[in-house]
Image 1: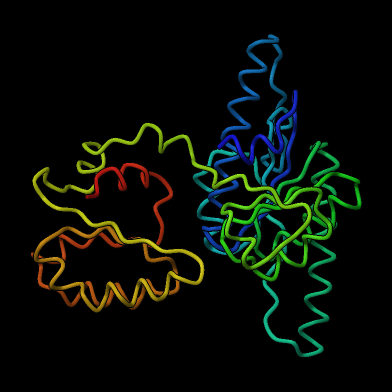
Image 2 (image 1 turned 120 degrees about the vertical axis):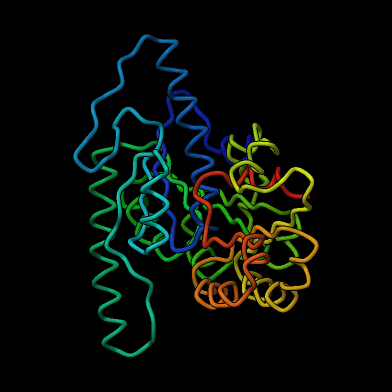
Length: 295
């Protein structure tokens, strides 16, 4: 965790965080936000300060971070349970390249930049961190217009279009893996590693087994993927699912696109095997215990 937070760390630092559209863009930023929130609380305790009141947007002006995200289903579901200061931006992913769609995309981008800029004006951040996805664009543009330094974080080995497009506007580019340089080289890259949420440091095998109602003597396989690899992993596990369930319980985090197909496969299993297949789009809470419960 020290990597990305270390890139941002400073006395009383306030950070606006932008990203969304997929869990892979949200959860690394939430990990950073949780650490900044803890450090801010510790600083308040040391100085006997009083935290400021909450604003109508849900942002707490005394917090160390404010999260700006999109309005996709995954964004709204995650932030409903995240316990961090956040505000949605009216920004949707651009689909298609026809003139009307490009024009509509441009209008929405300007609207989102305006929303982000107003949020930053109220929050007064010292730095901006973005993790990718289409919602990062208006956040970075608003930050640059306000002369706020930007850190771009790359959670994957290979950068997507959003990261490559925004990189020239960044003060620093934090990458998770050293071999990113095999695919993309930038003069402001720094290898920070991947942020880990605090819950992973206190995960419990017993608590995880109890949460999923899995006996202590059962073998447990956890299946999850991300980014471009998720679809192939989901298809691979569905092909071998039934024989695997004869030997193990399976905790499967499949993401949103493949969930209907996998739900259909699950419903076709016999009752005995169906109870061993624990299928979820995402786990907003308890993923650390799920990993600890697995073999």
